[in-house]
Amino acid sequence: MQDTKRMVFLDIAKGIGILTVVWAHAKGPGSGYIYQFHMPFFFLVSGYLYRPEPSLREFARRKVKSLYLPFVFWNLLALFGKRAVGISHLPFAEMLQKATEMVLALDKDGQFFGATWFLSALFWESIFYKALDQSMEKLRYRRAWVTAIFLLGMAVGFGVDFPYMLSRNFVLGGFFAIGYAVRENQDRLKKFWNGKLAAVFGTVFLFLGHGSHADMGKNDYSSPIGFVAGALMASYAILYAAQQFGRWQERICMTVRPMGMPDKAMKPFSAWKGYVLQAARGICYLGKRSIDLVIWQFVAFRIVIVLQLFLDHKPVSLAEVLKYYPVYDAGNGWWMAYLVAGIFGSLLWGSLLRKGKECVRFARA
Image (cartoon, rainbow, N blue to C red):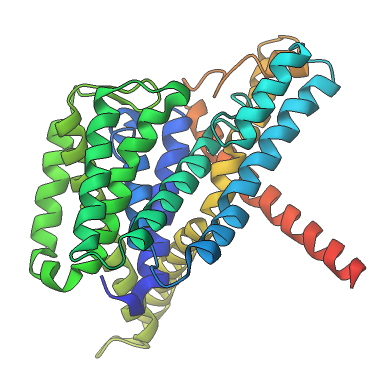
């Protein structure tokens, strides 16, 4: 887990992670397992990427720009947009209350942007971590104290059902703190970083996850301790696999022609190299654009819902499409259509939005 490998190692890890998120929301096979680690995994990686150098003000400014503003803007747009087109009939007082909750990053639109709660949770947990870290700057073993406070918050989150599903924020904050603790102590932990342990942890996770369930929104777990242990083991296995895949990619890039390979075998070898490199680049790209998938996957799912409603000879109206969340019917292989739409639809729309912003900036210049 070295800094010099960050872009390959962690982007591949995030790419694998966001793929599992969309997979689970599309109700693909094994989703029950995925729900037991995918959000803790992202908070663990986010904690690992935490940087203590910026001031609290600068840190908060960056998080407002990258997490808070996208969350508030798109959720408010959905709230008032649905009212404008006549598919929402909330009284003004309830609209105002809902908007206030969105501005405070406490609630979100549950039809288009249900997955954006991740942005608000990461915003608050990272800000709180930075504030504690800075306020304890002169305290000996301050990071140990900060980690202990977040782990205590995790325990409280498991035991108390807070409003606005905030219990999951407390639980995920513990994983954020663990992520940075791993980074800070990675030299000491290197001896525990190997393929055999990754295989054991992956196997144990599959064993623990069989028959278990985890619903972070409802704060409902078969076993909180089992959930934490399973999420950490699955995260370890994914991170190790991502690192090895990154190293494999590097070795392939450096390999021009294996010693003694005849000319007739060179073509399939080159093709194999190309497939591996394309796969690695694709996963890296998913990791770099993971926020696009977080924001837009449920919107992209609507494309498949429209198609299914049409094929079932049901009315295809906006109100009808919004009745189904997150999917209409994932059976008979339809989950694959949702997966494809959730990934490529989100990436395409995110790319178009960025190009639109660039055009606006160019026009103003």
